[in-house]
Amino acid sequence: MKPKPPNKLGWTKRLRHGLSKTRHSFVHNLERIVRGQRAITPEILDEIEELLISADLGVNTSQTVIDYIQQELKRRELKDYLSIKNGIQERLLQIIGTNHNGLNLTATTAVIMVLGVNGGGKTTTIGKLAYRYQKQGKKVVLAAADTFRAAAVEQLKIWGQRSGAGVIGYQTGADPSAVVYDAATAAKARGADILIIDTAGRLHTKKNLMEELKKMKRVVGRCIPGAPHETLLVLDATTGQNAIIQARQFHQDLELSGLVLTKLDGTAKGGVAIGIVAELGLPIKLIGVGEGLDDLQDFDAQEFVSALFYGEDNEKD
Ligand SMILES: Nc1nc2c(ncn2[C@@H]2O[C@H](COP(=O)(O)OP(=O)(O)OP(=O)(O)O)[C@@H](O)[C@H]2O)c(=O)[nH]1
Ligand SMILES: [Mg+2]
Image 1 (cartoon, protein in one colour):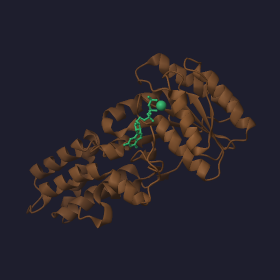
Image 2 (cartoon, rainbow, N blue to C red):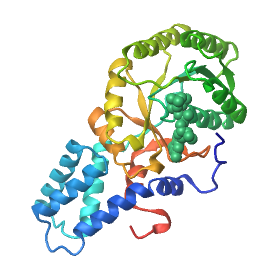
Image 3 (tube, rainbow, N blue to C red):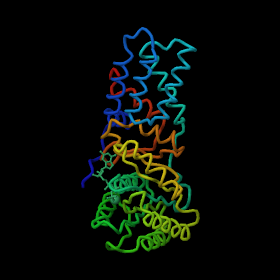
Image 4 (cartoon, rainbow, N blue to C red):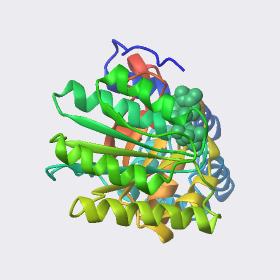
């Protein structure tokens, strides 16, 4: 499928636009619950907690936010809408930290391996990354190690043409580890700065398919010391809490270095980003907020939390 061309709007605006579904359902409901109240009663706190859970922050994380609000209510006046909103924002930032988590690309040939369940946005993310780094003048090679789905190699080749990245891939049914081996060898021979490995979508519950990923990881590590330098799990934000279950299992089996959260534009459940970091302690490295070539960016916690609360053009919420 054809990606939308680069958007002229700046990233912050696109992020805020992408998160508008989450923001509208969350902020508007918060306002409805809190505005005009004389005091924040336990019933109101319960309603706020339910709202946090429905934004997919997860039960535990929602509880810690409510605990914080309760504690702050004792310490200072937190009775109006604005101060409650700011209190929640403060706590969310404490939970996810203020780190800006970029990718680790310091190796001579930095290897990024991309995993995840079917249809999460792996190949699109790889295409966007290839476009980003080629534009920066880096040499990128893509390994089409999704040898399972018919047309997967073709899809990656199209991204290669779009971005100018080289693609190594064989016919459907080939051994994915052999593709990884050949791509790593070619990347080294060509003096590539970055090798990105696309893998077939798979369920985290399929042990044999997890073993296949482990093997690919070992193979690339033997060809390029320290590789893969990034093992990224792509998660579709619209799947909500299921994303946390997937991340836990993939991490147990493959020792992830970080997460990519895609499709934040298509969901009111963007709060899952905070739930994931709180529950797993894994950094979100990249987020996708659309199908455009530049709708993928490094995750910035402060920017993200702010976009959960404030819209484009200083829109009132
Ligand atoms: N709205 C939106 N759509 C996205 C985003 N990222 C990917 N998509 C769409 O999600 C669909 C699946 O994307 P792919 O990149 O093919 O997913 P995949 O994980 O490689 O899928 P398999 O290889 O089949 O496992 C495509 O239609 C993409 O355009 C995003 O951030 N926002
Ligand atoms: Mg794919």
